[in-house]
Image (cartoon, rainbow, N blue to C red):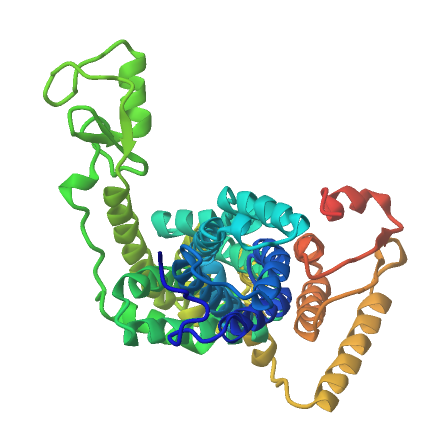
Length: 516
């Protein structure tokens, strides 16, 4: 015979012991409606807890004595209900980004808590407690459901985590990739997509990581540091000033001379720096396309050791690939910084060659565009718009359009270079009126058969001013083709919706080019 647990002095009466558990359950049920993450899982747990409340209330009215296993039951229920309460409170108060990054562990903790409560219910000797058949049947059903429950991160959350993990592994992802991931995060957890809101949420996330360090949770802190480094590539998570400081610090540490590639960077077959290195069964690494061709030609021996190979084994050498990409990035950073003086030279061929290289770099990766901005190329490119050479003017405009079309960080400098600031609303209104006047002058200066009617539905004053400034200037110089190219790029921007009508239909295919 075990002690009468419920009525023993250590526990007090049944009502005294079970009433706080019931109250905690009610709190969990109410709070579960306000969680930021794993809503369906929390609501499912809340439903289970609600269904066991009638049993607990029934027990508070019973005079229970010498009931086997009740001590263990109460301990488990008390502990796990408190765990559920802590989880629901954390998930309704803590930083949303932090919660999303931990959604897998949250789902696992919920699952463990649910199953532990089910185990406690299985220890209650219902048949000896004079419980109604209805309650007994309900508890038996709930217990079985809770025992086999499986909580997993939502599909949308899992997809985001996979993208983040992929971005961290690749290391060399573009800004657009990070921007898209951050947008998916905002949509998944209900954050505004406004840049200021995303920045605020990201700063709170970083404070959560500092708290993890204070708790001496180094494993979590290291994992989150990787996530922070990845998300810092997004536009909204860093101010232009923060990005510039980080860039200048890194660039100044590199010096002026390009770094030579390590011997391990070269493919033994092609003798060129590898872009996609893979390791074969012999342990040696080759360029993927080269070793695939080697195998396709009927060779099954290692090109270096001539030992037989398992041709089905090709593992990406991510460590080497990351090292190669880091070496390339450092040299690109040095190259971008070194081209500025050449653009100021008087040699037309040298300037044009530098502009071609700069355009190629900007088209390769978004991060290259950021580095060009950090090096303050915009004033130089604006100055080159007045060059005598049409090729130089065209190339400078193309680079400006690449820099500005997807980045407000580029649009703002262009706007300020022209002598305007973004002060009060009144100032913006004056600028808007000036811009509209400029548009009227622009339209009136065109011949009737070349008129464009552009209706701006959505955008900002920076974009509006840039369209006017560059289009007007180049049409004024009879650079119709370049002006149309600029307008076409702006039309493609997701920030704008245009309706375009051209009375001379010969211009229509060039202007639209599947952009609408």
